[in-house]
Every structure is written in C-alpha cells, then in structure tokens.
Image 1 (spheres, rainbow, N blue to C red):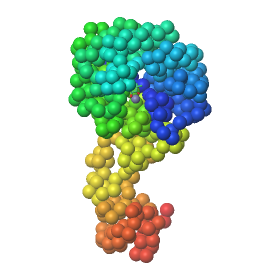
Image 2: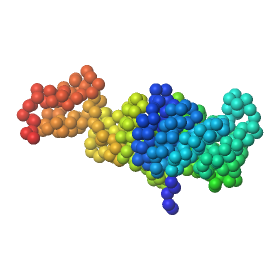
Image 3: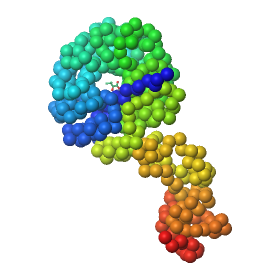
Image 4: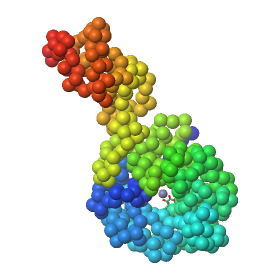
Length: 390
Ligand code: KIV
Ligand code: ZN
C-alpha cells in the first residue's frame, strides 16, 4: 500500500510571529520564507495582510519571491480582510486564502454575540468571497476543539459546498485530549457528505503540552495536513512543532505517512528561526534542543558507548544536529571518563581509571560539568607520560 502524503503547512511567519518579541521585518520574513521553502514546506502562511501595512508588504514580497510552496494569507470572515489577502497574494505562483470564523458557543456568544445560524451564513459567505481571488481556499473553524461536533459537521459541509478545498479544525485553546481530537476528525470524515472534496487540517495549540500528540491523532483519523511552526512557536504555549511531527512520521513507518521535509535541515532551520526571532530554544526540546543528543548519567553513557541505539532513536546527522555528546557530571561513570581521556590522547588502564575516577568525582561534585581542561589537569598531575604523542 503506498504511503499517504501529509501536507506541511508552516505558520512560523504568522502564528509563530504573534509571540511577543518575535516580530519580524519584511527582510527577515523573506529570508525565513526562502529557507522554509528550501526545507520543503508545502504551504507557507506568510502573514495576516489586513493587520498592518508592514505585514501586507511582507506577504506581497513573499508572494513575489516564493516559487514552489503555496503562499497563504490569513483573514477573518470580513470582506475587507479577504480583499487585502487577495491583493497581497496577487503575484504568487501558488496562492491560498485562509479565512474563517469562531464556531464554538464560547466564540459565537461571547465574541460575536450571535447565533449558530448566523455564523453558518458568515462561514459560507467568507469562502464565497475568497473564491473570487483563488481556487485554493482554506476555511478555519476557530475553537473547533470546543465546538459541538454535530454543528461543526454542518459548518464543514456548508463551507466545502461553498468552495473550500481545505478545512482547518483548530484546537485553538489546546484543550482536547488526543483521543478526543482524533474522534472529532473521524466524526467529520463519517458525517460530512462532501468530505472527499476537501483536505482536513490539524492546527493544534500547546496549552496542555498536547499539540503534537493531537496533530498525530488527527492524521491517524484521516486529516492530511498539519499546521505547525519551527520550534513550536506560537500564541501562548505555542503551536505543534514542525520538527516533532516530521520526525514522528519518519520514525514510525507503520503509520504509512510521509512528508516532503528535508530532515537534515531541521537543526539549522531551528537555529536560524531562534536567532532571527531572538527566541532561545529550551535545551530539552525534542529534536532541536541543545540536550536532545546529550548523555550525562553513567548508566546511559555506558550503554550509549557500547551501542548508540541503546539510548538514541534518531541519528543526530539525520536531523542536522552537531552530534551526540557525552557530558561529564557527578552522575557519570568510569566508561565515559575513560572514553573522554582516550579522546584527549591519554592511554590509561583500568587501574588508572579507578584512581582517576575518585579525583574526578571530587571535581564533579564541585561544578555542574567537568571540562576537558579539568581532565588534562588531573591526568598531568597523575601520570603525564600517559599522553600519547600524536
Ligand atoms: O489557533 C487558531 O485557531 C488560529 C486560526 C486563526 C487558524 O490560529
Ligand atoms: Zn493558531
């Protein structure tokens, strides 16, 4: 059975850029857009053109520059937003308008002071307006995660009939559990009569740390697009992280999915986004964190040195990381110490290592990490002749 393609919709330049302090100028946005295209994203959400003249300009310039990926602009279900998106996207080789409205009762009552029937009409209307500018229209049902499934199915059916070719089911507040989000997608697949005419998309936020798990549950249930950002940037706790979903799909071949992402670019891309947005990546971040391939406890180091696959499921080269690291701390063991002395050019036997290990532990207890300079000092004081001529 041939594998199913999962479309990667990158929203680093839109949802990611909404993070306080991450605002980008047009030049920075174009540079990142070019790299994202090179990375292999299928759709690139370039911004929200009506939101400011600067963002309109950025979307316009990205539309002029990008040749392979589809360039997408966000809008509310408001005619002037859609006109602005259509105008900004005019030069694009491939363009998509992403428009929509809140469908949960929280949004319908508190945000719009409206009714389900009125929102249904506005949903159809915005898709009809957007179709005047492009055949590629994505509708988002904001807060779909907390929207009643029966009503959501009516909205989805109506917007597909109005011409939406992708329907985004955002878990805007990051509320759903993976099985609930998966069931929502399955419900739509089973209860929307024209569902075969559109791609269902997962757009999950990370308020409970479940964005990636929910997106994967979504594709297992039949969605075929994931909306994500580099480093998981996005509103509040962020969005689904692109690097995580790509590597889950790659690691778990039995899921029978693939993406067009060049995995070896994931770490360089993460660093570029972090530097450009001046937003550090947490060290324990999966795939791209500084500690993602570091081993510091004695038990792990011993296993890793015998066979890397005992403690690593991904080869760091595969994701463009610097390489695995053995970090020497007070939790490290003799194997790691011997390994590091050997790398520094010392030839010590087992007895030597036993003696040196006692000194090592005293040094390690007094600092967070033992460095090569500390080891050289230990070795020089103990047995300088152990240094092999290089
Ligand atoms: O989280 C969300 O619902 C959004 C929509 C605008 C797609 O970002
Ligand atoms: Zn979002």
